[in-house]
Length: 277
Image 1 (tube, rainbow, N blue to C red):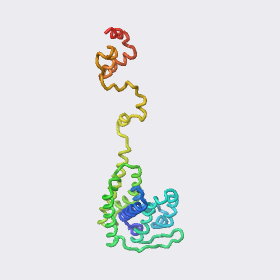
Image 2 (tube, one colour; image 1 turned 90 degrees about the vertical axis):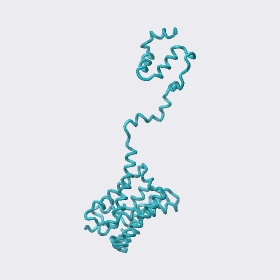
Image 3 (cartoon, rainbow, N blue to C red; image 1 turned 30 degrees about the vertical axis):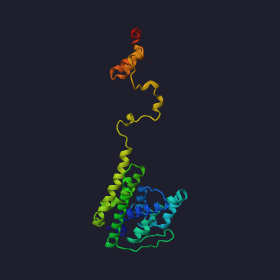
Image 4 (tube, helix red, strand yellow; image 1 turned 135 degrees about the vertical axis):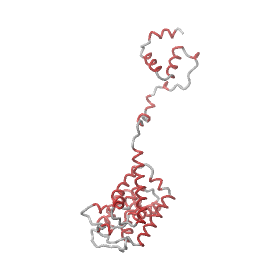
C-alpha cells in the first residue's frame, strides 16, 4: 500500500464534518451557504496527493496556509466567509488530527508534525466517520439541503473537483484501503455529486427548437397593433374587402399566400370587383 494511502483519512468524515460545521456556523452568522463550495473546501487540502512535489499533510494542511488563503475573503465578505473557513479548517484540526496525525499544522514556521495518530482503519475512527456521515445526511434531509444540491446551479460544477481528486481515487484504488462499512457512504457521496453536476449540465444544455419557441425580450414591441384580432367582426359592420381580408388572416395554409399576393397587388384587378359588392 502506498505510504500516502496509509496516512490519509477517509473522505466520508471530511465531507460530513465540513458540512456540519459549515451549516452550524452559517446559522450563527445568519447567512446562506453554497453547499457545493462547502463540500469542496472540506476535502481540498488532500489535493496534495495529486501533486508530486508536495508532501501529503504538509503545506496544504497548515492552519497558517488556511488563514492566509482566507484573508482576502474575510476582507471582502467579512463574517459571511466563516462557514467556508470552518469547512476548510476542520479537515486538518478535526479529521486528520484524529485520524492518522502527522500534520504540519504550523508550516512554514516549522515542519513539526502534530496529531493523535489514531489508526484510521480502527473501530474508533470508522465509527466516528460513520456517525458523522449519518448525522450529515439527516441534517441535509431535514433542512432540504439535499434537494438544493439537485437543483441546477453553476456552482454544482465545483463538485467535480471533489469527485476527481478524492472520491473516484478512493473507489478505484485496488486493493481497497477503505473499510467495507465506509464504502457505502463513499458511493452515496459519489452518486449525490454526479446527480448534482448532471442537473446543471442538463438544464444548461439548449434543447432542439428551443430558440424558435423562446421569443425575444423586445419582440412584442415590433408587433403591429392589428396583429392580434381576437374576434372576427360581423359581416355587416365592414366593407366586403376588409371583411375578406380579416377572414383570410384567420384561415391557415395557402390562404395566407393569397393574402400576401393581394397585399403586393398581384391581384389588384380583383379589388375593383370586391369594392362593387
